[in-house]
Length: 523
Image (cartoon, rainbow, N blue to C red; front, top):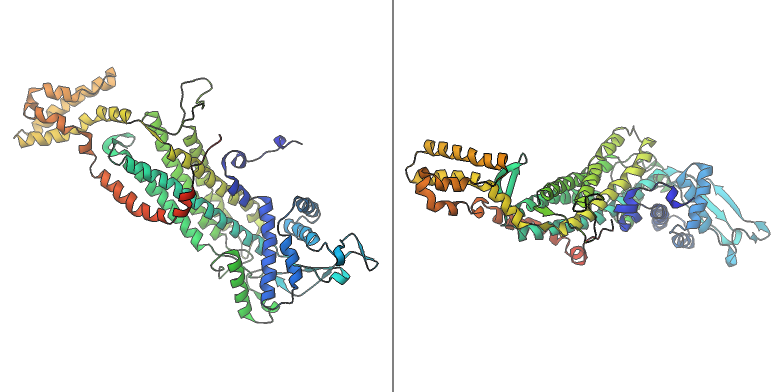
């Protein structure tokens, strides 16, 4: 069967980075399980358990899962209906495949065939009262393998989430930096503001970009927070009581504390959650999802603005020289990247509902209805976030602006906005405000009719200049309609924010930003 005969998520074939896909790959998952077994063996040996160093070394040498091991694990899983047990047996084969003098498991040793025997040991590894499997090679001695289901997979999931968070944070910082440069460049370029998607008081192009930055900064801070607060599950026992570990260490509770400290250090976590059941609480996944998935909403909001501005021909996303906008309409320049980001953001922003339901239905010390959905939702959450950031980096680094179009749209609306200044100027000449208001109202409606009914340009200022009532301010009118008089404090707002709070935050990512290049999209 060809690979083209199987469904593959477009997140991996079209959108996400190889780095993110590797984190959630089958090889990374199974190899991390093996690494956890190695760390446990090292930690228990360090705390005095009689585990041979050469056995641990053999485990270290086989941490990376080979294609052959995956094939073997698939055979075992068909038999056991248990993915971790399948990999335990596959790991056992490669970690105990040598006899004295290099003999393998298929050789005779002292006239007897290779034998695997299970010795029931009253110990608990990673919280489960389990079987410690040993492989007897006669003169080779002991080979050691530790089993443990949910603690091991949960600890692995925490490692994957931490790696994924570490991958998306600098990418998010890169998008913020792109917009910081853009906002400062156009901090004083006037543009129409919109409320209710109707023309409103002028702002600047940079001010609008600064608003996008602020929302992304909120996402960055939230993701940093959940990343910094992420803890390990560690070794807590089948229901979080640590009972079997207490037995393992002959009642020495301090050694359980030391064991978890060692494991946390090896895995790169500051500490372990003080309370757990058979799993770490699924509230952790929900907290991570609430932070990461909010990026989906922000991305939609930003790209919706860009798409609307593209329709107005004020702003466009990058458009490749050979890019085709429409198969039928050759002239079209569709904002397909922003549309893609919007679609991916829509999916990401709705994932917290899954994590909420999973957390809600974890009865007592655990149920298994979290397993299948987490296998899908956790990787997809990070692949979606990664895909969004790659595309958003590409778009924000290459935004195309059309100042002439922006000015022409201002000229269509500014005469109406300038009437307030004209009324105030008339008042300084002793003209009745009520009378002036009525004169302005009549002329404004006439000019509006030209625009809406005839498709003409806004000629309100010309009408004012021809109306005798406004003679006292005729000489001031042109100076009263300079767009920069209507942008308020926008330039300073942008400067203060981008050079202050934003710059301070980006300084934490200087090393990665210095090395970063703009994401190139192949599709």
